[in-house]
Image 1 (cartoon, rainbow, N blue to C red):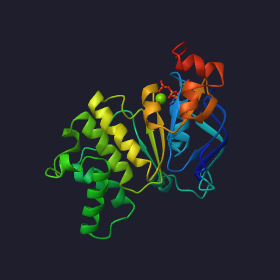
Image 2: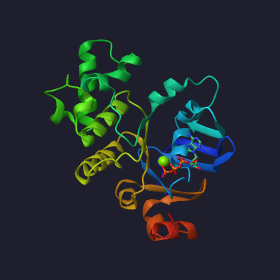
Image 3: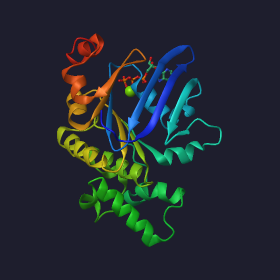
Image 4: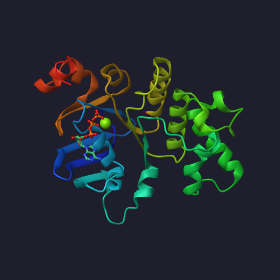
Amino acid sequence: MTNKPIKMSANGVQVWYGDTHAIKDVSVDLEDRTVTAFIGPSGCGKSTFLRCLNRMNDTIDICRVEGDIHLDGQDIYDRRVDPVQLRARVGMVFQKPNPFPKSIYDNVAYGPRIHGLAPTRADLDQLVEEALRHAALWEEVKDRLTAPGTGLSGGQQQRLCIARAIATQPEVLLMDEPCSALDPIATGQVEELIANLTKDFCVAIVTHSMQQAARVSQRTAFFHLGNLVEYGETGQIFTNPVDKRTESYITGRIG
Ligand SMILES: Nc1ncnc2c1ncn2[C@@H]1O[C@H](COP(=O)(O)OP(=O)(O)OP(=O)(O)O)[C@@H](O)[C@H]1O
Ligand SMILES: [Mg+2]
């Protein structure tokens, strides 16, 4: 165990979609400046749990969430919390790159504009450049910032979406299989970027690639049938799992 501060803390989280009990009493602490990987077989609830962390499940009508989730000690499901403000603090990157049908510049400027983060055009220019540099995309796009974001390659689009997510200066970044639509080179670039993000953010990443989890994360949580079966230091989970189900999964017997 490291002694980094806890950024997000989930306690007794339960999720239902109608009658389907998708998350069963999950408690987990996410450390700051750490990459935590969520792994487990398809349908075990990884995306569902990730979406609880910035209340994206609120947008699904039949979805019901119970339990407590705290960000810096504050209950994110409290009535007084505005989900839009919350999502500026807890950003998300999806499986399929989904740039807005806008220019590269406007994709990144979108969040800062909504949240009033840049008083002048010069401030906004600077914010956009910083986010693109941080996402390791600046050099490739600096001469075509007015071109459409959808005209970039898949890997570039995903880095653009990461730039868009970090432009609002979130504290937590949630990534749901961010490399599954990318080739090995783009995957390598995004993984390198994730490693750099750890310096500033608390990152939670869902992945089906155990190699990827081992490369990018310091902590790993293994989900199975809606339960959090095992959670610990990534090296330990992969070399010396405590639970039989974790062992079966990482050795390829289930999933
Ligand atoms: N919008 C939804 N409506 C109804 N049921 C849902 C919805 N989203 C997920 N579920 C159900 O909740 C359970 C968990 O699904 P979830 O998408 O969280 O799994 P996952 O671990 O992310 O799987 P995968 O690895 O395939 O992405 C599944 O039984 C799924 O069918
Ligand atoms: Mg999923």
